[in-house]
Length: 325
Image (cartoon, rainbow, N blue to C red; front, side, top):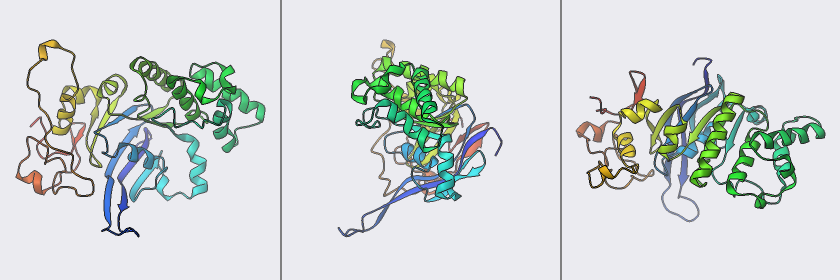
């Protein structure tokens, strides 16, 4: 791993055991994250996309050790986080932060904004009460809000303003790596653009690295440097944003992009490739390639052999028959 890599995962898994308790029923395993190997580079925005339930949010939280991995490793700048005790991990948490999806649920309604922003500062021994107060005012101004808002409660703000407060909280202790978990999906389109512009400006100012979890490919195209496509707990393709949109290699990536609405009347009525069937259950995964039950190009080998994620001219794809031949 090079020094330019901030977060690295190797064969990372997170499995959930369901059933088999006092209510009876057979014990089953949900493979939410199932063998993910990724490198996220310094100062880049790495977008993670895929259908709901594919494991994107779980992967982001396991990277931060908000959830413990079942196996595999997560490393922050070469330090294996999975092997750290709780005290050592707590010392690193100020470098690893998250902006949650719902700005209405992620802020404590009983706390004033000043209390919300000062809590992580006090937890990590930032400084004196005056220094913490000044830092909170600085954070609000950094995200485009007035310092007078420190005395307000979350219910006094709009959704976009609340998300700005959530971003300010994540930046309180000057982190290095920030997970943005669907952080603009609950906002109106015009507010989305403002928050995305803010995130881009903060990235330039503070040299931040983002893992940007989303299902909105239009946002990805505008905002991300590289993209990872996830399906049923596995990453099936990785590449630069420009390459992925110009020439997807995995059939799933191609079909995801084909499903994006295009406001072009010339395309009305034309046939577009569509995915068939339902997503298989993560508790009952198909044999071979997990996508073969929905793939229009599947062959016999796809039903029996699970393809590994392999390098292909600087890209990575897990497919027996990638679309470039």
